[in-house]
Length: 160
Image (cartoon, rainbow, N blue to C red; front, side, top):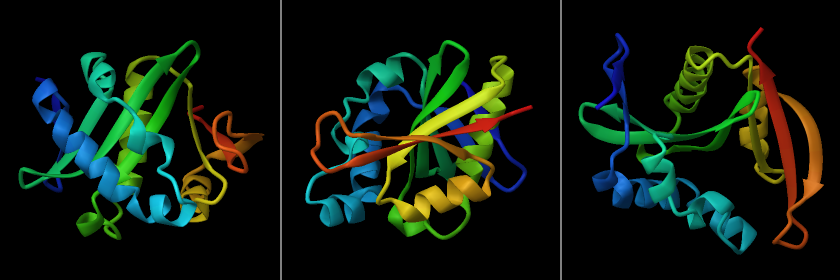
């Protein structure tokens, strides 16, 4: 099993099949405020994570053995896509979202990518602000293909 440990006790490890229920539960809890605000769950809540886990794309952030967050990465031609960044509610406000973004950059560089991309809902203003502070730039806005009235914000970060 692949794992990376930081000097602050935070460990990242690849999710395995047995982690699927925990991945789904953490995602649902992390996105719950948006599900309530939007009247429907955001895409990450309804996603089947089994294929992502099988592809080696789900990384868990653990603190003292407890899953505090997760990152779902997809390799695309020319860039690494962040499909989801989620932090468990009880761990929010500790800078773990930023740690997940830094980790995504590390994984992108290791794989030879020079760009990381993500997309989010235009109403997730707090997330957009975090991504912007971290160096992501908005590249486009588009209508959600399945949810009338929802706007997707595409963002990218150049790794130089």
